[in-house]
Length: 407
Image (cartoon, rainbow, N blue to C red; front, side, top):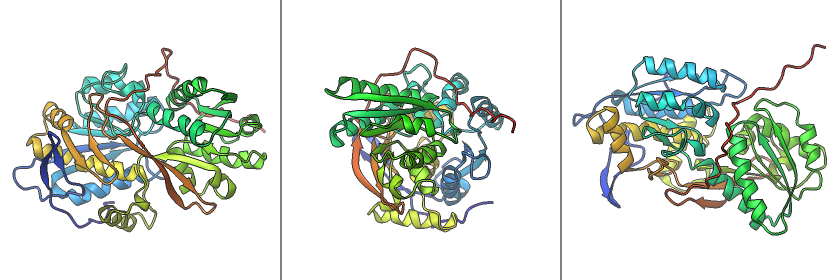
């Protein structure tokens, strides 16, 4: 079902800082010879798996509805495992799209990156594994990272734990795929270099873990905890820390906000939790963003958007704007245009650097016991900034928890 169409704004084109700047929320009328661009989203939505969230699908569909005839949009569910992601990618390529937005997990994209590069189709990654930057082992000219590089964000999180929280005894939890490997490697470098800081416990978990009691109890004695995880395990872990009497600051990335928004983290667990979102649309003071939040809630049944909804929306609009500017949907023309343009979106001001990274800011977030969010700190990343902590060993694929033994 198509989402309700929002009021369209006019496309504004200007020149800034030597790059073409395109205004946000620009629906356009399809005139001026602008070609129709075919975009496919590779992501699940609510109900398609236990890990699925509605934000990607809702945000992209809202943008497509606003753009009307300027875009031909569809979505293919892409389950979390690399094998299922490859099947979804092959289905998408069979439909001959002009651009693809996809894969919330870095492990999905990393595992099939060569297939993506070989396709030559502009691919906008919903995940930001350091391996996927343009000159990285799994990157390519046609792969753009929507989000700040994961290891850069992890470095900022670890510095926050040391400098702002003044933590000396730190517990770490790492999901056993690219998210956890990259994040914990970057954080470990910060902690190892900091005077008087000790990692007192380090544990792992699968992406679908439902009992993290051992991991939570292992954190006893830490004065702060940092983890790099997926939303469902974070919801479990945050509450089990409190259940086991471990009442200390707990820092995670974007999964924290998803876990709180789902209602899985409340009370003291929510108060202790810090997250890092690429943007927080619901607390923005911008009239443009507030109007967009209202539009989104109008088609989502009142559920507020998070960063991923805004980014999916922005990428559909950015791709359509690039096609209009290039007057073409030819892959090389689109790639060159996107690499040289600036797009003022809902979530951020996007401008590609030499690594094909489009966004260079993120927000440290906190919550009260009722789950109300606020921005506590803004992180900024320099163009071409790279933590450079990708391990030489193979990144483990996304895993699932083992089946329970027969009762």
